Image (cartoon, rainbow, N blue to C red; front, side, top):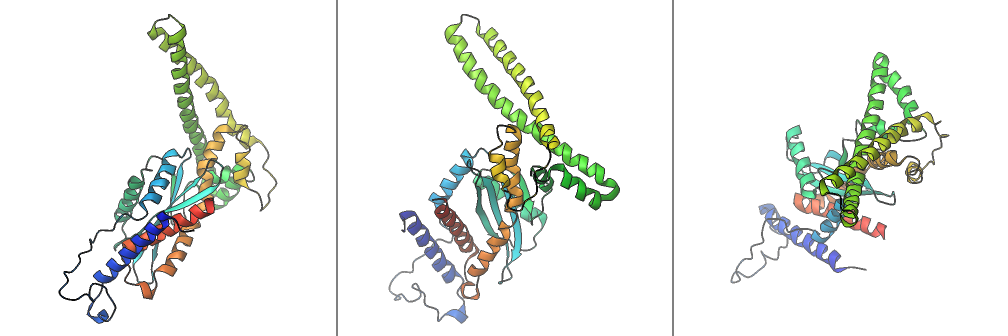
Length: 338
């Protein structure tokens, strides 16, 4: 059933398409019907603003609200392709896991990038996208053309592989430097554990400090300064004991035997159900496992664009094409989520 929001999007796309077709018309295409060109000369011409009206603003606002409330991090994939009109387009897609551990992917930009495609030009588009969506501080990784240095971390977090697969392939790939590269992967895992542990401890300390301070003020005549010192001491003791526990969490995970290999294994479900045993690693897995699952999405985005940028639609303005790509992706996912 068509909704008012969907109708609004279709109307905006239609307006943009007419605008783009009119602006791009040349002398060889004068036979093409145009409402403006067909008007009697006595009627004043109508000026359509060249700037693109906000497409699907309601949909975008909803998606931005999802990102704002998201407790996990977001993985970004980007890919460059040349369309059949010899124009360079870059897709920028966000991937994340919902609270129920369901993979979500949303196209944020499908942007025309004029030549030359230098690193400075591409980096500017990345930063523009991240700041527009207000997610620059919520990233886990950025994968460029299906290549990411964090893939090894994601592999370690698969209980079928852990460090064993890393050791097997790194010794083959790096030869004499294999041991060093393996140690670097392991160090990265421990660094991530420490980072996530500090984040969790700060949140717990803040909550404990706020609740204990309020309780102390209401029930005790102890001076406020002493209450604060006591709360900080308790938080420090809690952090220290938690730190000791979490530091051994990765060791415990790696020391356990790998699970029997099976192609039908659902790694997301395994981590969803093992959060009590590995609470911090579960948070890391939620942010990093999305990398391995999402690297095929940029290709699917360009497969869709191949149906849009045809010879019959060669006059589509790049902004209109981006609007079509994004709105199609958002509406499709909205239907699938119901």
